[in-house]
Length: 226
Image (cartoon, rainbow, N blue to C red):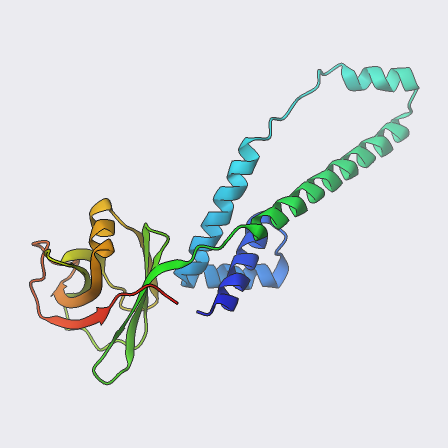
């Protein structure tokens, strides 16, 4: 995914969270979010930002007698009162729209989360099998490409290879599509000391011992993206 595509995803995710992305475009984006881990991650980021802004808004409820007193003082008819209520709602909606637009501009000014480390796991033929990204310092995204058929009852497991230490499991790799998972403190430390990752074949659900038990099929360099 190019930087330009990431910026498009980030813009659409912010509009989706704000609610300004509507109609067929919103439905297409929802399908994209359901099938792409990076899109889902950006949506959750903006939803959390919106939630944080909403926490700071403290609604104030006026006493019940205020509006009737205003009606009596101004001698409003029922129809006039209804019109004024409609105008009040319209004004409130305009204020919400302005605040929302300002929030969207603010969100767009924030930097997108960039990968801090990436790896491409390939077959000997050069065909890409998985694309890996470490987002920030605490999330691993793995995208499956053209995978060989797995033996029945087995999974592919990803390992960090820290210098001078034993392999550390980074979890089972997806057989199709993408997966996204939070990294533990041990996994983050292992990745920080690793220049390579490896893939082994393991029983379903991953190695039962915490170390590779099956054949190590692939080894790939882990590097900081340019």
